[in-house]
Figure 1 (cartoon, rainbow, N blue to C red):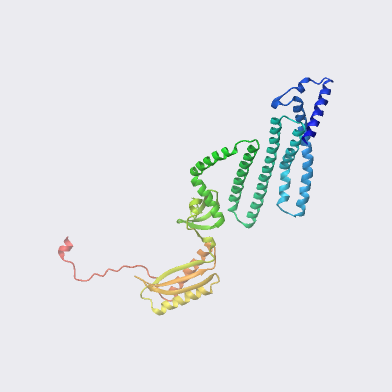
Figure 2 (figure 1 turned 30 degrees about the vertical axis):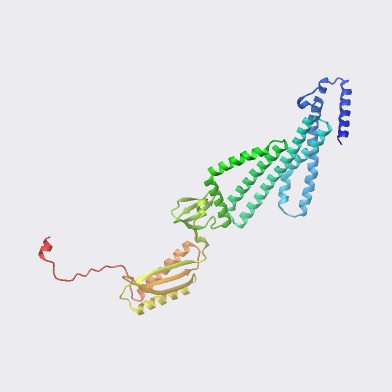
Amino acid sequence: MVVHFSYGAARWRDALQAWLGLGVPEVLLQEGPLRLMWWQWLTLLSAIPLLAVAAWLLQRVVMRTLRRFAGWTGPAWDDEAIPRLRGPVLLFLLALLLAPLTAMLQLERAADGLFIDLAKALGVIAVFWALVVAVGVVQRRLLERAAVTGRTEARSLIPLGARILRILLLFMGLVAVLAQFRYPVTTLLAGLGIGGVAVALGAQKTLENVLGSVAISVDRPFRVGDWIEVEGVSGLVEEIGLRSTRIRTMARTMITFPNGRLADQRIERHTARDRWLWNVTFGLTYDATVQQIEAIAADMERWLTVHPKIASGNVKFSGFGDYSLNLEVLSWFDTTDLWEFRELRQRAGFEIMRLIERHGARLAVPVQRVLVSGGPLPATALQS
């Protein structure tokens, strides 16, 4: 093959020398940059547009073939990815056509190696370019699926993962391109490794919060829109970011928790409850009779049992208090909404007061009585 290319190059040189008789300057046979004659440079510069046209025509054939194969798979990710691969495919075909051209011109060894390395580098860039395009397509599809399934926290983590993957691909592509030009990439990787350790130590808290956001997304202890309670703070989760989570309190203030710290906390998720517990104790005065206490407990339990929004109810005498005879109410309201629970709790409280009044009993309040025994105080004590 080399002999054939050498013979072709010799024929070109002979034709060029014959052409000189028609008045072509002799400068074309002189040596230029990279120890190449100017006629070789002129051939290269003239062939590049022709190579671009040939690569474009081949690209159309390749893209048409890929679209035909994609049509057999039905609606899939490749239908979106293939139109975005026009640039990488064109660059890859141009790299394939550049290598035979340099061999046909029978360049000097140094120049020939440089152009071959350039063709390989263009091929590597095309491959990593296609991988970056594929990452973008996968990112868009995952975001669409997260929107359909309601996984709002994934909307922050998917772009983060895609961004990290793109950076890794760009770095790997740069190393691969430098390796094509025989650059000592081992030294570069060693230096970057030491620098990476220093950066990781300096950004420890930031990395901890980013990993905490990943843990929250995987474990899903809460979602955007949930009412949670953590470290004594109760509120609505408004945003789960890459570094922190924002909670809107009942007082309409915004509290921000770092995700690294939040991932290690005990979190109470009120939105996840299927029922709402109502446990209250009320006391009757000590002059209430057993019959009154039994009647109030039975009527209240019956009211709780027949109520359509109360799953179960239990009212029992719980003990003797310091100033009251105590009844304990234990029931579960069949609701997950806070405002409906507050409404049901109010109705139940009013019903307790009506039952107590109906049965002639009274709610006990703490009253302290002081009994003074003995005769009147001495006159000296009154004077003092």
